Image (cartoon, rainbow, N blue to C red; front, side, top):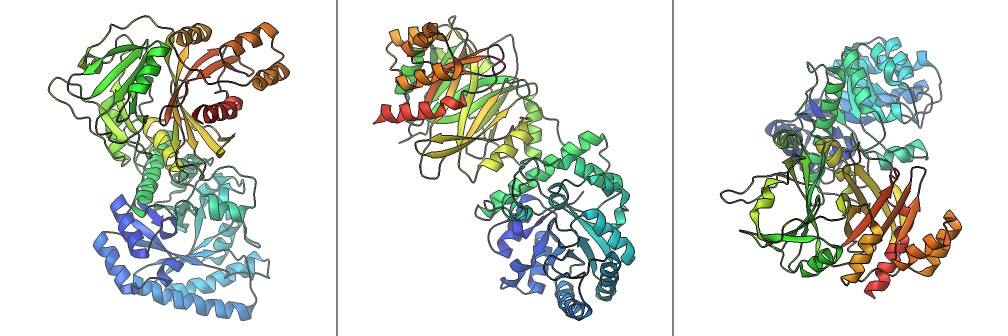
Length: 598
């Protein structure tokens, strides 16, 4: 199928939006009328620009408040429409979106609305134009796509069809299966948008909170399946109103948008098992585990001290780069001082183990994900890398459960791997800006097939933190993503290591000189009240500055190291199927870190 995007999705001028859409790989654009009105280019110049860029101009939109009106109002509406048709002829466009009336409708009659649309169709046909009637979710009388289609049927004119918008259909909870009862040739256009589930009026929800496919809660894969079964062969087009996208870089958003359509079409093709109309790309390779986590800084010595105090082993210096490796069991932490002038310690990269790294690279290329090379010399392993929206470098490596990764052999003059109480990297907590978050969700879901459970909110001394965990279905990969408060320039990230005996780890770390975050006595009084823990258990937790949580599955114990630069470490012990992250303890940790730094 062809792919289009409404210019309302993007920031900038009409010219910039068209350039970005073409660069991102779209086939066409919808012209949002306000973008045309403020442009200095004439319709003829816009048409010529589209030709040069290889773009089609697919839809002129929106034409508002037409049907369900008295005759005197209709006459003026037809006058307005004719002016638009003249402009469309100059643009070389042949389809106009007509939204159901929300302001001037006074006649609640399908027959009247159909007769008026028929008159509009006659006028449109005289200009070689078609009109696509759309039911707005907040339309005065017509708010259901099924009613809009009945009116189009009654109009019975070749120049009158319908436009289906996923937001208007799915936000109202309407069953999209009836799409299959509409002849494909009468579906003149399709607009797609995802959205989170929110409890608010549908107009505000639509105007401010739409998302690109794969980022919200709507079943757009099923929606596209209904379109294909109906015989629709026109463009899949994005119409996303969102306060973030209207402020972010135009080209970056266009690429983000194009990736969402590639993902959606791939998912729909796989669900149908039919790629005659839909294009599938290389199959997703879900990560089986975390290969390594990279911390980068001009000076990583303070991080090395923490790792040694926790019981990790120094495995050596890379033979060609200023990079060192520390490990314990399946935990591998890479410390990188390369090209890091004036940089404080932060999480800079993550390695993931997959079944087929080459297939992941092919899928990434199809999704338009920016590759990141690993500079290698002779004899060094070549790893496939991609840039996440935050700049995090993600490398994938073919998984071998029975051996250490081959790249470990590139580190020299270190100690042999020793038995350790750590079982692996439990999770890596990442930070994004508010403008990167939705794009990051799509990156992890579309490229690596991670799931995105609902968001949570955590109060911190700096403000409210929005958090969403990206995870594999089996929990082998857990990547909590935090949106930092706008009031703070930097917000910490951390690496959580899992173990089977956290008391032993904490005791040994304290003996090696680790300075624990001091957890206040009030916290343990609160634990006693909330969970009814035995007094000796409370005292054990208090003596090691351990935090505690419990859910229906089991128990969770954890502690944190002090913050070094923008990164700290966490040690966790999950018992009896506990599946959370101790979110209730996050404010305690944040306050303790703040005291520790003051």
